[in-house]
Length: 488
Image (cartoon, rainbow, N blue to C red):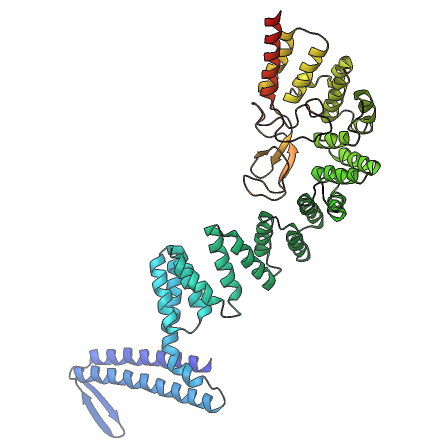
């Protein structure tokens, strides 16, 4: 600090001296006369200028010699790199200048200039954590993936830059579509910095894409510990992952542990409809019908849904329609004014051939909220009560273009899904599907999964994407009416 201040002061004196000498030289007619120690020197204008230049050179040499002396004294005092720093000072200045120019060029979008300056900085500086990173970023911006990959690999050699190198290679593998290698790199990056939020999110997405639900739950736990996730959201997403973990092993030969995983998912988030349905089916497989009924009732109280009704029907698959109506009062009494409850009750009464009661259960739904499901039930009621085929076809025709009603919609991109999934097929959002009406509800449905789930097909079978579409139901009804008329 003191040495830098001294150099500034000397520079100011030198400039002041030059300015004074130039003024004196302009005022002198015959030259510059200098009196020193009883001696007098007379210098002409040209000689005076040369003398000033020589004086500046001598002053510069003096400063260099003083700097060398200071570096030597530091070296003798124990600073082993003092002399090397003195001789490399000019190289460092050029290197840092090239580095700053390269960073500015990269920010300005001049990739070739940035790469050139980065290579120059690498030549002068022995700081790969700076120059190699700039080379990698410039090459990446220029589209030279091979050069960028080599630079990122060079960063792996140093412990200080290893994490940056892994992240760079990870980004490249994702752009190439090599998600297998990207997953391994993300795991290494997570092991180095488990609290890094971006790495946590990226690893979680890759694990979900590869159906590594157990690993994803561990990553989610790390997000909770890092304080990057509220506990209520953590419990919900952990339940989603637990549900998917159970789905991968839930089949006819599933172990007790696998079925318990579905029950654990329901315990973590009782309002998660797929978890409740799967947990109930797991309990049914073990003969615990009361426990299954209790889970479905709790889930129905949180959010009435056709999938819950379908699972509730599976508890007693061989019961009569009238017995089913009576047993389902356990559900329908919870939210009697809910639209889903009224539709469910109407379906059950149609199956029991109690058509007046079914019409009463529907109430004003066909006028207030005419969905495909409500209109189709109304058509079944009209047919059951013996009304003309034209009336039935009228209700079915309205159902063809009516709103679908609630569906599994992505809260992020509004994409509609036939079945619940933890990851949106359209935007890749995690746990973004909710049961609600989409913004655009008019038009024919892509699937008939929730249309008359307890009337069409076997009551014991859960809704599947292959269920008959509404247009096919209508076509079948019209064809049947036509054959009847031709026969008469």
